[in-house]
Image (cartoon, rainbow, N blue to C red; front, side, top):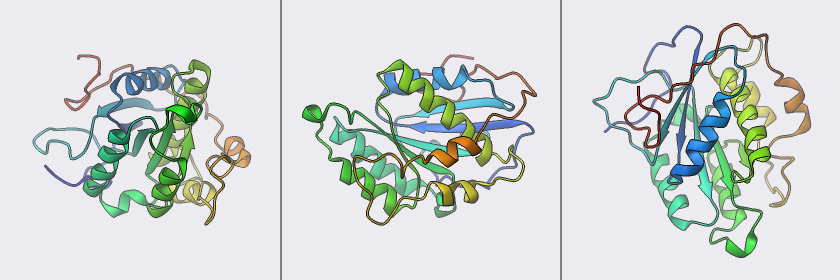
Length: 216
């Protein structure tokens, strides 16, 4: 077992790799499939994991972005994310980590308060997105946004770095729990337009940690 570091491997030419981490296997699979439907200038690779650390004896590509998915209906989901964060190197939190929260639309079913995840994201100085992943249209919009963020984190968008993106998505000191403007302000959506299509998107979910992945 090992700590994940963003610079421990050389980048792959024209390839962007994201790691989705959550105990919600079905939602991760649906989100991954939605991401793969997007036109992407890079070869898109998606790995799925229930938690960290990942096995250290497995050869995997460099990870450009980690997305921790938290279901507000499950305290276990939050607990596993909090435990997993201990296995991520601090340099990843310079714009290469994102928290995605689902289940906020049905407050009567929530066992985790929104303020809890807002404080968690603020502690790690990382972007926070809210999306009901069970709603296809919302999931598709979030998947498109994540693909654009991934391209920036992989260094495939000229003139924009992960640190630039982090400054735009920074969470205020006292965010309102019902406001998503601090999570994804309108100006960011305008700046993350898709670059011209240069290569086809790979539709492989690879890696042994991909609990719900397609088989090679």
